[in-house]
Amino acid sequence: MAAGELSEADRLALDRTIRLAEESSRVEFSVYVGSADGDDTRAWATRLHNRLVVPARSVLVFVDPSRRAIEVVTGGDVRRHLTDAEVELAVLAMSSEFASGSLVSGLQRGIAMLADHARPQNTLHA
Image (cartoon, rainbow, N blue to C red; front, side, top):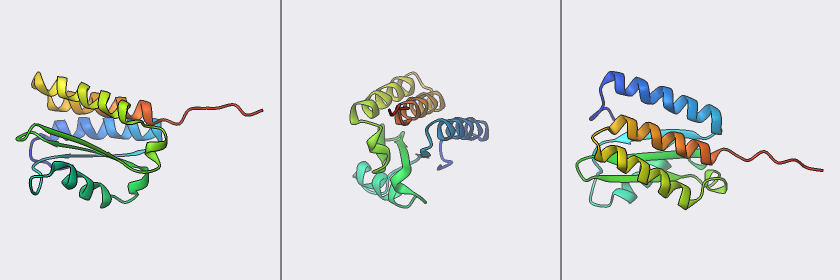
């Protein structure tokens, strides 16, 4: 998590949100708030995601407030349970919160939505 736009209280609140999301979904979440290196925010977010400890089981939420860019990068294992449509819904929810001036609330809402959808469904086998 880049510290550029967040206070200590904000970081602690996000850490709690991430911990709960990871416990409920068994997916690792990372948040980066800051500027992208270069013009392509998607490529930058993908490079950050690839540097994570277990990228296949991880979700990276990248927010560049100055460019008003949000990128969500999911690993291969995560994509089995989290669809592009579900990611788009989380991005829309975050965008709505960001527009009202609440960066942390937007991240918390988006992470919670992503975790809820990324959770593997319980199935009964006969």
